[in-house]
Every structure is written in C-alpha cells, then in structure tokens.
Length: 79
Image 1 (cartoon, one colour):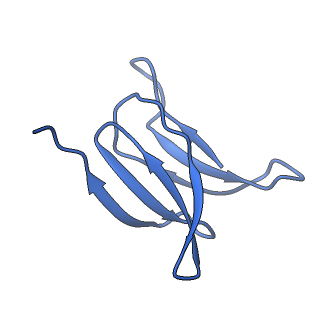
Image 2: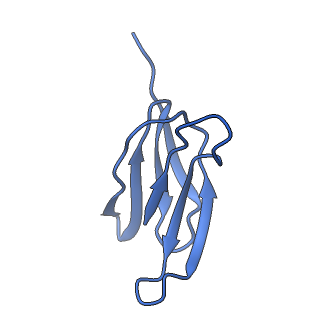
C-alpha cells in the first residue's frame, strides 16, 4: 500500500495505491481529497473486514483492502 501526498504545485492529486508484492503491478488506485501531509497507512481488521486506515490533515479515511473503496471518513476539525 502506498499513500502519495502531493508536495508541490503541479503534483498529482493525493492518492492511495495497492500494488501486487511479487510484480509491482497496480491492483487499485483511489484519489484522496487532502492537502500535503504525512500519514502512514495502517492495515486493520474490523468486524472481519480488512481495512486500510490513513490519517490526513483534513480527514482520516478507512478504505476497503480489496477494492480501495472509501468505507468511512472522519473530518478533522479545529476547536
């Protein structure tokens, strides 16, 4: 799992990409609506379903491990 966060003007949009470990071939790719930040993807199982959890500046997201579909989103808000 690779989380790319654009760093400069003109960078491609933020995205999460799943790659086949043996070949490096792309399995799926989804875009994220966030600003440049650092976040390490975490793989976690919730109620028997494997998810990829990624924190960002604007929101934290949970993505289906097999498809990349965003399952849940929590907006980060300042007090």
